[in-house]
Length: 193
Length: 193
DNA sequence: CCCTGTTCTTACCATAGGTTAATGCATTTT
DNA sequence: AAAATGCATTAACCTATGGTAAGAACAGGG
Image (cartoon, rainbow over all chains, first blue to last red):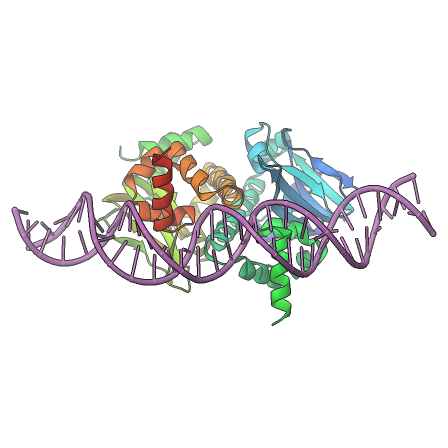
């Protein structure tokens, strides 16, 4: 089965039955994506939330000055979406791009709303997923406000060494909230220690 | 009834029945707090998530240098907690303080876990609550990384004029990720326009 | 109503990170 | 293989914000 990762996640979080899992799985639409292909374009309504079976993606916004800001970096077994657009079903501000050859499994808004009603386990799983996502987001925000870019970079390569290696530095810099030039300076400094 | 605000919130998000609501309500423990009183101290396990009936609170962390960082500012009809500590039931890093005479209604971890099992509406409500909280957190993070402190301040007083008036500037500055001195400078600059 | 502590402001200098521009690889395209 | 593109680095200069210190304004408790 291609989605063992997801199955294990859900089993760990809820007491979903075999049959319920198969029901849920039947709603997931497999979508392969070539490197650099956008799965979502800024301004479109995001109708799905996607689970990454294989590969790597980023979501990002573009500010008034045309500068990109990486909101999320996601690899295997992560969910990705423009949740604001998804939750409100209105046009969003994020684009989502495959950074490698990627296989995404999409769960569409109306299907998920149906599933919530049919299977309490699904709602419970997403309740826990959003709760964790919120906590992580708060911690990242807190780190951004309280520690230096250098320390944030160090924590990133410690905590997510795989992401740090797969993703171009330019996107890492953006994720950290600095320019590639600054990241380069920081890396140089760290090496000389 | 003291908790009409919460009742309306939940009714808007789910199809909870009158009886179910009364059941949920019976688990909420009313806790009045004097101004400057901490409802939670850093290092303790946060055993509750609290709904503010009246008043105003902040959650904050203290970094290695002893500097406070305001994580959340909450007024009437907001929930507040150290969600990381709450979700894991391990010691947390946040303190939660009443900024005014406040009436808080606490929902305890074990009770909420029980309620999730008894009432799907409750899990659905919190799923939606966390989803929204995550979106807001992402937007705040994005703003922090992409726009200037001046613009963030302007957006805060536009979007939350009531909070901006009730809360000392020193906490607003911390929430925005700058020092009170910088906020003062920004305010002076904005006036002279 | 005064007194003490908190909050806010001002002014000074210091610094992390932004901006711009140039260079060198590496990888893809033709 | 040549050309074009994208990515990483370096350097010189610039700016927003931080750090520190001090005083002014205000608020709450006795």
